[in-house]
Amino acid sequence: MTQVFNEDGVCQAATILRVSPVKVTQVKQSETDGYQAVKLAYGEQKEHRIAKAQKGQLGNAAGSIEFRPRDSKNENIEGVEVGAEIDASVFAPGDMVAVSAVSKGKGFQGVVKRHGFHGGPKSHGQKHSHREPGSIGATGPARVFKGVRMAGRMGSDKVTVKNLTVLQVNKDENLILVAGAVPGRKGSLVEVRGIN
Image 1: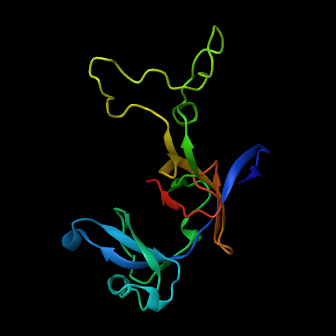
Image 2 (image 1 turned 180 degrees about the vertical axis):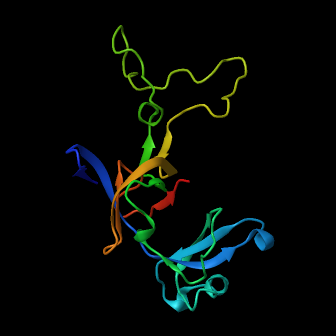
Image 3 (image 1 turned 30 degrees about the vertical axis):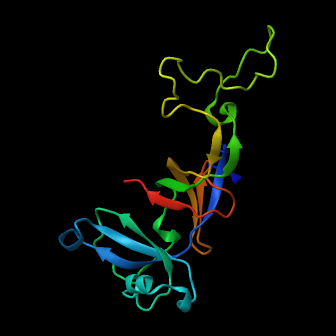
């Protein structure tokens, strides 16, 4: 993360995202596939490390050896051809985007950190119960109901942050500057989608 100043001199928190060029490996049509989408792939891998089934998926992209294919559903896919490369130039300052990534893992956490419980009273004879969850249900059913909020593993979930504004685009270095914070640690793989 960093901070930038806009034209009015107002400081704004922002995140720098490096856009890896992606290649179109398949164009799906409503007539043949039931929906319109573009299958995108990015990254590089040695050819002998790619499974035969993946080579079949990527074979239409002019001998590309990209991996990690993913569908990008879009209503308007006219003019998109197999083998075309998409980079940071598809974004422009002022665009609204949604960013998805796997959030930071926080390990096993208690209910105060995980669910925002307030804990027990801090006075009047309380001892060692400041961060305890308290009662977890009634005596009658003699069981714990599903979905009761308890301590457990926290983080490492797919999180989507919507309505972020693109502040700057550096086409030479394939960088975009997005207002605010995005999920994930440094170096995480994030997915940036335009909001129609």
